[in-house]
Each structure stands twice: as structure tokens, then as C-alpha cells.
Amino acid sequence: MRFSPTGDEGFPELYEQLLGQARRALSKERVDHTLSPTALVHEAYLRLGPDGSGTFHGRAHFLAVAAAAMRHILVDHARARGRDKRGGGWIRVELDESLPLNDQGLDRALILNDLLERLTRVDDDAAMITQMRFFASMTEEEIAEEMGRSSRWVRKQWAFARQWLRARLEEAGPTA
Image (cartoon, rainbow, N blue to C red):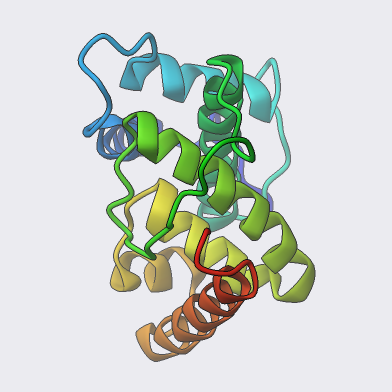
């Protein structure tokens, strides 16, 4: 099954869902942040294909790709702000789905992005679930529905992802 977000009659609902995800992702950002939720959604949409004609295998695939695009935009934004994520003191990263995207949160977003890229090579589903939890603020039930899987399966994958992430953070030592 092919899915086109522009051809879907439910596009206004899909757009509102993306806008809600962007609002949650930016809700803890500083007041004078240059990215608005609308700008984040529009930039993500442009990255998916300049004319919106990307090929997706379904709504869940589209939402996962959109969450990845939002993640990359936030990471690019953090890098553009001139953050030196490896210099100076190390930052302790707690595994908290409500990752605040203030100055410290942007640094955490960079660290999490690096870990997600590594996790993708190990288990793509676990990385997708982590991405949906952190960057799209989706619940296990929402993820299960979007991926067409059971909540139990999502819980198991999420538990694996958390364990894997914690192990990588412990390998980096107390400074990560």
C-alpha cells in the first residue's frame, strides 16, 4: 500500500497531529526560539519531498519519517547555534521522554541523535520507537497503533531501546 499525505482525505487531521508533535517538541524551548511549531512542521514536510510526493508505505511510515525529519531539524538548529557538544564539561543525559529542548536540551538532542543513529544500525524498530517517544512525544499506545503492532510489542522494543541507550551512556562514563 502506498500512502501520499497530500492525497489522503485525512490530511488536515494528519497536519494537526504533526503540529501537535512539533508543539510538544518545542514546548520547553526558550521563549525567543526562532523555530515555531508551524515552521518545524513545514520544514520537515519540505525535507520529505519538495512537492510532498514522497512514497510512504502507510500513515505510520509517514509519521516516523516526519519525526525523523523534525529530529534532524532540531539537531541542525542546535549545531547552528554553535554548541560544542564534546568540549568543556560533559553533560549527563537522563533517559526521559520529556526531553526539554532548552539550551541543555539541545545538547541532549545532539547526544541522543548520535545514539539513535547507532541504534538504527542495531535495531531499526527500536530506534523508530525511541524517536517517536522522544521527538514526537507519542505514547506506547499511539506508536502501536501507528506501526500496526501490539502495545506489548512496543513495550518490549522500548525496554530494549532504553537498556541499549543506557549501556551506551555507561560506556561513555559518568561524563555522558
